[in-house]
Image (cartoon, rainbow, N blue to C red; front, side, top):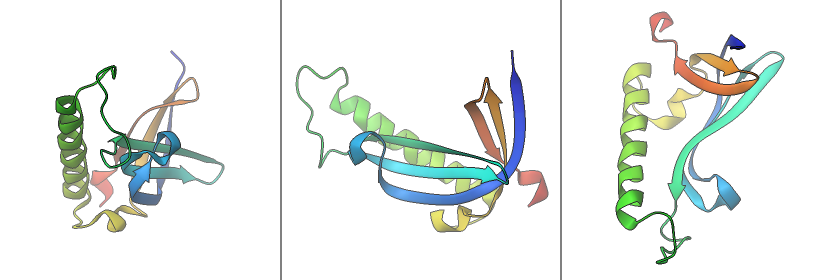
Length: 113
């Protein structure tokens, strides 16, 4: 497997509309350093923009579970970064793992905080 690790920072962070056609809601990150950058998010369909229909492949329960997952994800990031709001995540050091030039995972470098 062609795995590569890069070190950088959270260049920007946004909580709000993101994802497919800006019809999703969640948290969005730009990660990077000199010579590289990547964008990632954790989001789900915004119920005020996307109505559930019976032919959808997901249920309202699925959407509720996704909301809970996103909020727990944000809570974990804030805890690990030792900050109390999303905007304070900007500038945090990160380790980013790529597999074949595709973002595989990333983490805040808690050991240097």
